[in-house]
Image (cartoon, rainbow, N blue to C red; front, side, top):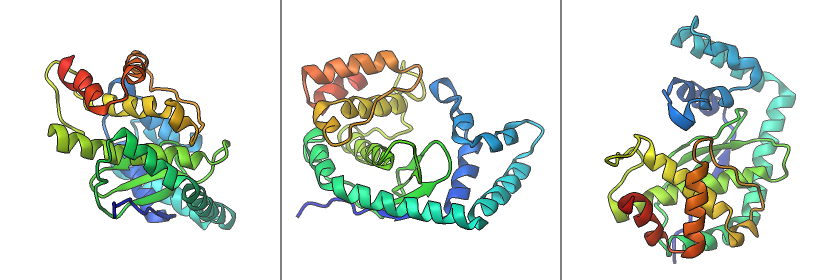
Amino acid sequence: MKYYPKIKFRASLKVDTGNCINFIKQKRSGPRKQFTVWFLPQDLRYILNKKFSEKQREKIIKAYMRQVFNNKEKRQAIIGGCKKATQDWQKVAKRYFGLMDKVFKKHSWPKGNYRGFASIFHMFPRYIEPKIFFFPYVHKLPKFSNRVISHEMMHFLFFDYLDKKYGLKQNSKIVGKSNDYIWQVSEVFNNVIESWEPYKRVFNFGVRPYAGLEKMFVQMKKDWAKKQDIDWLLYRWLKKR
């Protein structure tokens, strides 16, 4: 029987605190330069001021997170959002995995302890090796957690496919391309699949590529419309160009 990941959904003060501390430490350029600002709630963005040391930022984040989780109403909302995300995902998981089988030619999912953590922040990173990702505990759009979960899970399969088929990792460099080119291709590929009609019948959310990647998205979408073959597509974007 083919292996499909069973995701454990959790709410954790410790993990989401670490998520924030780790995220704001990372240096970014190009389309990702604004991620740190977007990630933080408005009332926490002041910590990006250069007058704060890394240690001071960590202290402020920890205090902020304790305050959030010590608020009974907020804590219950986070836990409730986690439960709702679990229920919503269970309703679409089978169809989602069927779609991924079509896109990735029944490539086996990498085995692991897949965990999704509810987050109070506004961007949702994933960590490929430990199979961890973050999702919103609440959103103005109904079932938006499914949009994030499906997106991040696709990254796990994409990078395993890239590794097995092409020997490329998420941080691999391609001569003549920007240092984050693999990341660019992975994000645009996800967006292209998310805009594909069979996918939209399951997850009908709008698709907007990252700033700076719009032209890549338009061209890759045309490529996928012409031929729904991941190997043909990746050859064009990783080898031919």
